[in-house]
Image (tube, rainbow, N blue to C red; front, side):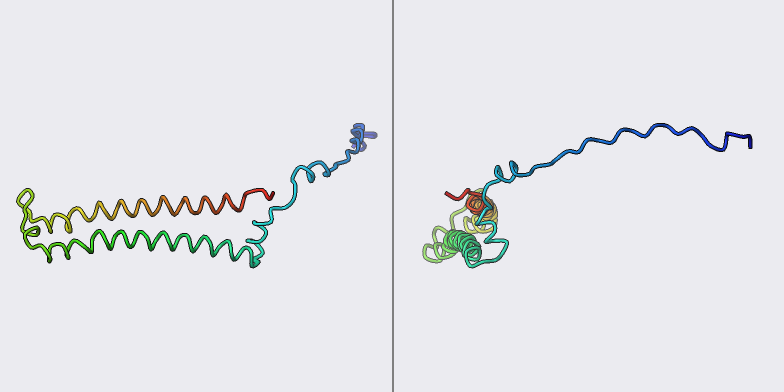
Length: 137
């Protein structure tokens, strides 16, 4: 090695960055008080348990009401045909009315009841979420 090359000239160090003080007081005051209902759910307090039981009760009541609609709609047809045999002998497009009602038209009826259940159950859940996210007064 040649003399003086073993040591390379150093570049000047960059100037130190100025210190910045971070204050979180403004962010904490904007956030507001913690949401008590959500905390009750997370901590599984009696209040949170009551909220969840209310949702479960609403969903169960909806299911039972629609089950009664299905039972009344489909369950009374065989009774009608047994009580009035002339109605059971009536033909539509060459098919006996009981076969048409119970074998064909019952499926769209069940699909409509199922779609109504899904819509109303989701509405119950949205109401529950709105209750949880509602700011306390």
